[in-house]
Amino acid sequence: MTPPATAIAEPDVVVVGAGLAGLCCARRLTQTRTPFLLLEASDAVGGRVRTDLVDGFLLDRGFQIFLTSYPEARRVLDYGPLKLKPFYRGAWVRYAGRFHRLADPRKHPLTALRSLASPIGTVRDKLRLVDLLRRVLSGSIADQWQSRERLTLDFLRLDCGFSDAMIERFFRPFFGGVFLESSLHTSSRMFRFVLRMFALGQAVVPASGMGAIPEQIAARLPADSLRLNTPVERVEPGRVSLTTGETIACRAVVVATEEPVAARLLGESVVPAPPANGVTCVYFAANASPVAEPVLLLDGEGRGPVNNLVVMSNAAPSYAPPGQALISASILGLPPCSDAELVQRIQAQLTEWFGSTVQSWRHLRTYRIAHALPARPAGTLVQPQRPVRLTPGLYVCGDHRDNPSIDGAMTSGFRAAQALLADMDARLI
Image 1 (tube, rainbow, N blue to C red):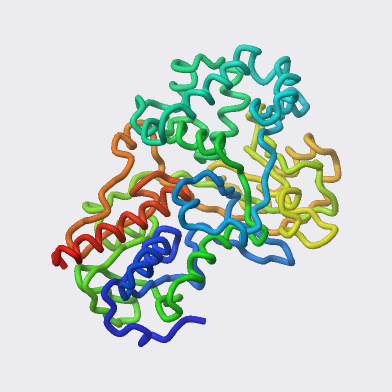
Image 2 (spheres, rainbow, N blue to C red; image 1 turned 135 degrees about the horizontal axis):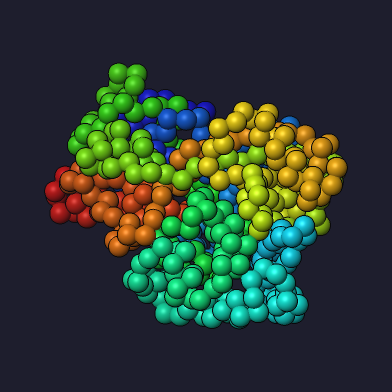
């Protein structure tokens, strides 16, 4: 239920947007007992990290995973109550009409040894994987952000020496699914950070869906500090105007929305709206899982439309009703065809993978997410952290101010709160 508009008549701070960045900003303000009002345009917290309940299935809004090694997440979240469910440390790659298993050599050495002769790259490629892990695990996280920046594709090919076969059959579908772009033009600094996070922790989902992460943060905020279904029309230092015509006076404003909304509220000269990477996620219900493990399946043949597929209920049985399986198929970008045509194309591809049983799968929902991640090609992370203070009294945060990840969003929210509190202490606002 949305708290009444009079919950905080004149808060010190108004935070616009209750995604992870806004929630983490509000969390820090709560810790310092700074009065604030958190405004959210939609009917729930989470932003892009939300979960819908459809016919007894838990559908995350786009296939998402949580990496337990994220530094800011480890500081903010209580992992126990989330009941995190892990995926297999590796992947199955579809190539030449069958699946080939690739495993983390540090966690599954025997499986990794058996995969040396697979056609997913050469034997030298498999050995180079070990060296790549060593490189991204050496030094600190800051060292990875300060490393030479280039296209991820060039880093893999020129710096690491991976063959075209390894890049096309594994790196392109796997990290294309992470970055939501198949060209691998994402900054190598982002690649090194993400690979380090995969190596140090587990890829998981909460038992009750990814939406449980923002919900946990929101549950610890003051009960009268959140207003849902409250779109903002305009922001300026000391004032927030709502679409209803209501105006809220305050000492400071934090814009914690995704980049296009921040650009609209603050102006593109202040927050440019660069290209974003989109994704389409299609969910199916099945009477039985096509695979027995909680493993990511990759299209190493590049035939599409599905880039990667996972049976969510294999990792977290709570994602599906008893006796049912929940299947998530991800397509990079936004296909121009209708949802019905896309489902037919997906089922045709997956029939080659799993047989005619695919035709009995029931389509649950299609999510077309145009702004799933800010695009961060090489050259855009020369400064990994962008300023969050625009002027004393006006701040901005989100994954577009750090790096496009859950951890980046959470970190930026904390940084914005710290900048605001420092200005208050200095009596600049």
